[in-house]
Image (spheres, rainbow, N blue to C red):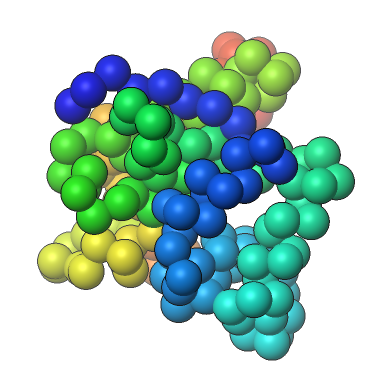
Amino acid sequence: MNKLEFHPVTSARWKDLERLFGPNGACGGGWCMWWRLSNREFKVNKGVGNKRKLKKLMVDGIVPGLLAYDGKLPVWSIVCLFVTRTARRKGISVALIKAAAEYVKKQGGHLIEGYPTEANKEHPAPFVWMGVASAFREAGFEEAARRSPTRPIMRRYLRATSQKSI
């Protein structure tokens, strides 16, 4: 793996995000808006609508995640942990999760969570867009809860004083 650079997703990096996600919006027109919208709104906006909503977040000054660059190309975005095909299975997910935690800490955040898949069988890579639990564990996250056999809630405290029950 080459040296990675991590940058916040801003309007200035929109073209990079579009190139990363491709014409299908990363996975089936989602544009990593699943956690930001109600189920109904997500489905109604699938495709172009979700793309517009994600772009509006950035125009409004909200940083929805990070992009990782290997040279000049974006490798993946923290909003979904979607890794470009040629960069998969090289440890980029773990590195980006760690970078996200550091970014959140520098912004004054106290904890960070992830909602990955517990990969108990081989899933096609585009369908584990929330990441896999093993990558979060390797990045220092611990399981905080589990609502189903395949969906742990992974949490990492960034400051010792924040270790409260939530």
